[in-house]
Length: 296
Image 1: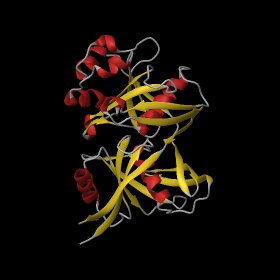
Image 2: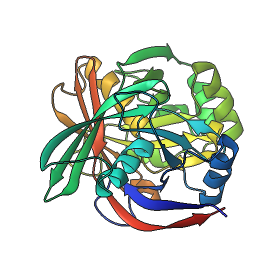
Image 3: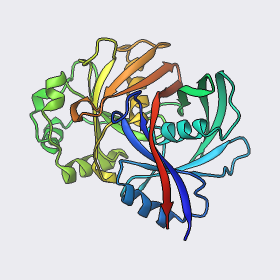
């Protein structure tokens, strides 16, 4: 029987039982891809991350992440929570203040900024890839049908629904207000079929009306293409969203922006995003809520 240490981390929050729960399986090199997928089904969180030895010389570690249905890439809560757990475990030497560490995810090796206070992680920022602005989508009737709502909820005055990537493509859909965000009940099959030609697995709805005054946007994420009915916090989508809104002058460049998510499903999350030109950083705070031994 093989044993693997795992930690449970609530990501994009400072409070237990909020944010996006991430199981992190340590020293997972001996696990096959099929075993990783089965473990992700066992935990049944939106994603489970496995920590491996790096293949790139510059990287401190390599990460692989799985939903209960498929392997996923990009640096979102899947990476932030794992990096937080590794920082807590002192996997690399960290000093108080800012530390630069490189992580390997898929084909990318990207820097992390780990801020430490009294020997413990205080905040982590992850660098994303340069933004890629993909296909736009203007069939509002089909979109409303896939979301089981009315065409009138969409905000069409300054932005259009569009696929954008800063490491993973997400279908960004503007709606008018918080009431519009509440008024959606996606049809998983229709939404997955609509998003697939855009290179996406679902959609990321956003409103510039927020719950907290200091926030820049409120969001909801539905990814039926990879088996996620609703994600409490999606860093890989918050990066593209901020990049899009800054590029259009809707949000300011060079400032820390707060993207709200999960508020409507009782998992409030606050995702920090910094955009300046093609420089995109996504991060925030986490809290470890449990750990244990997985026996196979």
